[in-house]
Image 1 (cartoon, rainbow, N blue to C red):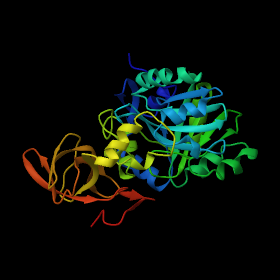
Image 2: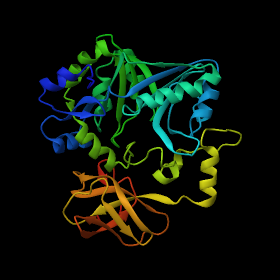
Image 3: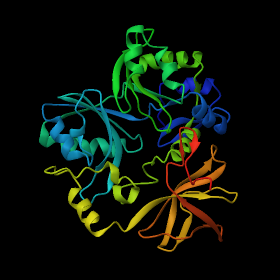
Length: 368
């Protein structure tokens, strides 16, 4: 049965086109995906991300547990409120999920994991936590709103109680704090996001969510749907679980080697497989591509290059660039001149570094 977030009626009242997304009834757009994309790049937009799974971990040995669970090292998190992006791996080095972990106290960390992987994530985390005596508690009573764009933080800060505004405004990237809204709602405000723009992801009780959403609307923050979220995150060079990585892909094959910490003496799950792959070289690589001809790059299209045959992973038309962009997975080595097979016609692609867009601007070489 399709699940609904607490904001479902709000989306429908705003005229949203609703679609099934991993078993959730979610807004695709509110009329124009392109306008919503530009709204986030140029001003401020907001997304209902209440389908994401919030998991609180409690226990005296929660840090040693996370040192085992994650390929990135939670030892980097030294101050309460700081956050880290990383992957949970299986023993083969495949990505079970990518997630954000927040350090809240010595005996309390918070994970935010993907909606579509909720069941397997909770089972895996619970299985691994048993040896450490860590309590794994899903928080289904919480919702989440992401407010993103160059004016996002200013708009959110204006809705906080006066005592909390400065602290929220001064948050560093990948850090979180507790705050109160003007109406007294308790907020967990994190300076994170999935669009390449600045902004906050705000966790709050379901009971307070509609009121805070409406306050954001009154403050001039326009809603944006899954369509704009996807074009924004791909322009920003951010991977999507299930398309750009999964359990058959290692972080090295997903251009996520920067999230792997091979710190001495830490036996995280999947480490041996990654060390072998690092020594021998990964067989595949993820590259960014741009198509200068008209058309759209789509998941599953065949890619041909000097190193062999691969495929398009995430692909879309970039509203900011006015061109089709994509991630592709191809064999290791110099890909040389790359083409994509579009209905039997080989169309040239340019291999470029990503992110494709940063701070609303095309990155060097992307527009050629």
